[in-house]
Length: 142
Image (cartoon, rainbow, N blue to C red; front, side):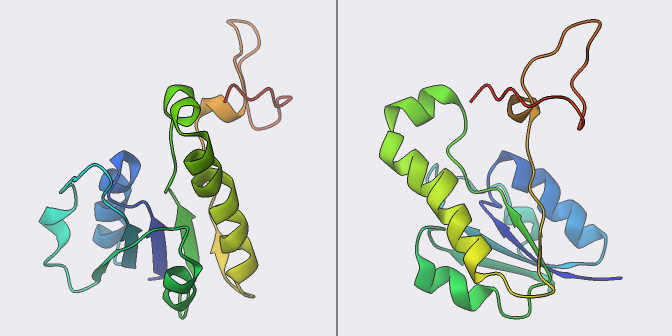
């Protein structure tokens, strides 16, 4: 079944892998990205009729709200990633990584799902005997 999907930060590393796969699976994908690194990682899918690219900032509520109309799945990838980048830009990191997520949660309506991607940093570190799983106690690294 095809879904209408919004991917924030979709031109970043994860999005550049995920968006083409979603399109190949037959989904309609809208990407919101500010292209802060000047990347062209989605140029090869721009011709796809199920792809829609919006240049904008996840922190701009007036930009985000209209994009949610008709969206069934929201995949928030827009983020300041890694402790060094967050430490060097703490205000921007908070507004992107925290505040914009609250905005998405508040704007999302009934029947809209938010898929929260994460890395092992959200779980913490394990060891050879005790691997981190979804049931492990959370000990976030960053």
